[in-house]
Image (cartoon, rainbow over all chains, first blue to last red; front, top):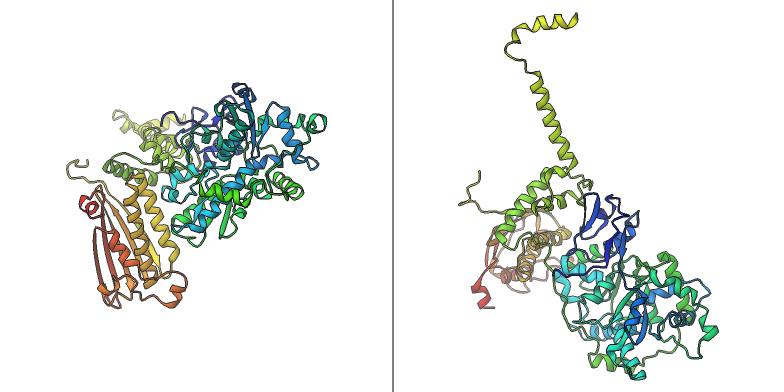
Length: 452
Length: 155
């Protein structure tokens, strides 16, 4: 896939060519070349770890802007559950929802409401499922992309349902089309995202052929506008209540929220890409078969920890919890019968399997790959094993791989280079000590001469 | 210089397994899996190999006092060998039967030793040899070919 799109990119002017990001990237997708970080496109899973890590703020996520609203007749905002944790204590949910109308949206649909549908479907699915356990959440696209390249074996255990974002876009557009008479295609659905991976997910969706989402706007871009319109409800807001999600959907904003929707099962919730990796390693080894469902989130703390959010994750989480306490216990918008019907009709089931992407392969031909592997082991043994990153590759093993792939040299290693220089210097010294045969008998004379 | 006509690339991975070292068995399997992924082997072949390694290493951990797992990869096949020092197997044919187990109650309590190990290994291997001496130890040799039409034909 040459046209594979990425949200995470580099602001070249800001990049100082340090090696912080390469060391932190969970899939070793970054190298430093000619003093700048370079993202290996096909490896990047858009987890945003480098955005958090970069001391110069040179890693950015490309998301859509509000200008894109002009492309559609009718626009719907789809705020992520975690979005509501970004405001001060006194703000209530209605204020935030009305503010979306203030900044140009015709309507707002909480993704939390769609999350309740997905949660219910997964719950029902698990009561009937007899296959390999645990089942993984399909909500976090960065984790799914990680599994595609590093844990392909586990992909058939991904819950076969669309993400809440996708479900929200579909329901919101259908409802709006029915209400207004505007054709479905002329309605724009915009996800308000804490997360760069959702941008990639919209453009190259994994569980469906075409995403119903028309744009993904980063929380960081829209936050100030929303703040400015927080008072809109009192000045020009109507009497209708916009909030429809309950605590069950709202809690998807932080880790454990999703698994609490799946009541009758043994669940496990993990946040943070490096924690996810160690858990997946364990499951790949055949452990945790007694767990029914695993909620896996790339960000520490779940979506409240998303790199595009404004608040610190702990602040965001406590604010969201507080909002849930104050506004989360309302009557459910979808009745149990509605949810059951949706599940029976398979309405939001994934239509595409999540396919493995074998990009770690050394060569298409096994024999040649094996040859490269031999060489790779040899080179790795010869490298110092410091994993210092000065060569621009994240570890000695990664440098060895880069050498094999023809994009680096052994002398990129400063220690190796130093050794070579030392050998060279010794050779020079040896050469310098060689006295020409014409002078070798007169060494004493020479000494005397020098004392003079 | 290497003679290009007779030279076959190959790699060997070795893992030491101690008594009741259940954790390392899983680790061997996942380490080898990573390597085979890099070599670009088919997913179903990797799966079969991983099962053999896991079960064979587990057998060493459960039944022996110490042992070694040696994985040898060549361009067309992989050989998995375990050598252990331990109780040995009295009746190999019986041990191959599904559900037959000599694992202690304690080990079964932990969820291991269900008597599926050797039969699983047999199912996944293209070639399997087991030699054992009671009270001395066991050597297991399993081979999986990367391309095998015969196997695919009988499903």
